[in-house]
Length: 372
Image (tube, rainbow, N blue to C red; front, side, top):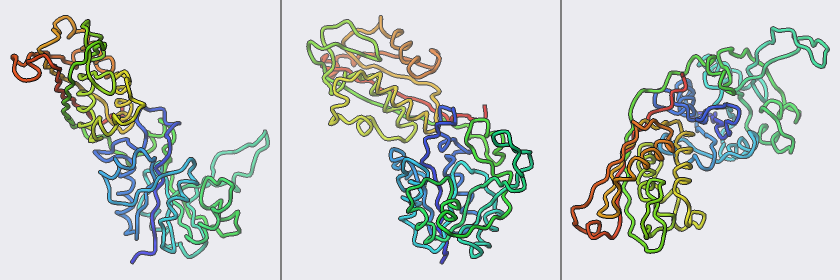
């Protein structure tokens, strides 16, 4: 049985990355970056347990990709690490950041081989440039660039992190608490992905697979008198609207479900439950904006969309083009990639009796191509 647990920290906000996609969700082939990094580690060594920290709103989706232990991250890296350490019961723990995506087998092996030499084993790179601080040149031989992963004695690391002081890495906490640290040669290829420009240094990353992901949506709402009607974000000039918790825009609701279907992110009822008064009477275009933001952060972009509105009433000949323009703009796609069809139900059923409107949608997504 292995005496080593792996912790991968992936709960950051990615605020410095300056891309619409959170860096954790950049696709490498079809895997999100965090999964790709986990796979690289497990190919090198069999760990007793793998723990991955994540934002609370991402954990359920992450479960679709892994059976590893997922832990809610905190406000800081150290908070996230402390949360993860609660799940560790092995004598040693290896901690790395998802942003350190190209750690190689040799570095992992050298860390593990050195685990008994000190309380924390740290990869570090010597500084080759001349360095000055406040106008004074510093002896570069005394400086080191600290990397992750770092391998620590679990008991000692847990004790060191009881301090209220915030540390940027494990070894700093351990040394501050009186523990020992040993440096081993780091790896220049293990570049940390912090800014968008860092992508050119992460040579192990492969571009996302060029595949199409399709989702369908369906929604229906009954009419309600003396309420404004909005369909596809456009106000329809009739004396009735839709009976619904929100504004009842059945076209947008169907479209949202199609987007969520293509990305496997659930459905509109889960994302925007009608039991939540936050969404009472809300403009459905705002729900669509939230949905697009969600799928974009998770590494997708919209290719095209097609909706079919089934309505005996109202008549929509004069509205279809307006709806197309509105939805294309909302989705961030060209008009020729957004299609809007309208048909009747041939006077059959509740739709034929002019009791409501139904909409069917289909959406195609692809992985965001970060290599562009």
